[in-house]
Length: 118
Image (cartoon, rainbow, N blue to C red; front, side, top):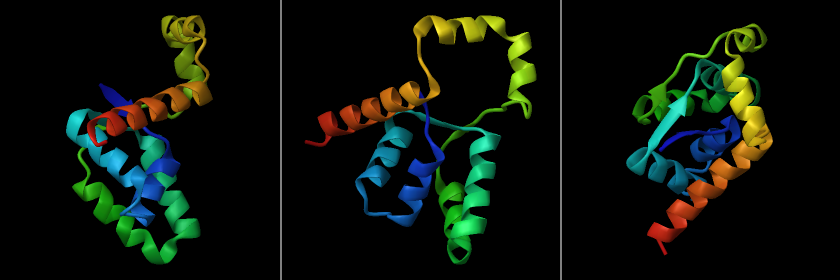
């Protein structure tokens, strides 16, 4: 399964390396494919620069050791949607909002991790 995570999940894993979320990320990279895009990487750098400047080296260290698939996303999402109406239709048809899909993905990660490590 290919899994894209929220920026906050990665930040938590970096700042709290012994946390449950770090174990989830580890499980994802071992048993699935973690997917990151330029928007996530850019947001991570922005947040570390703004909030955790003294710990920004941890971000680079974490990303350099993290196994992930890097996928291109258009800089202008709205204009790209015009050229991909079938994708928007599938999203609407599945009735998944961005927030719901994050919850589903996170719950699946927790479920997968919990079933293998209990």
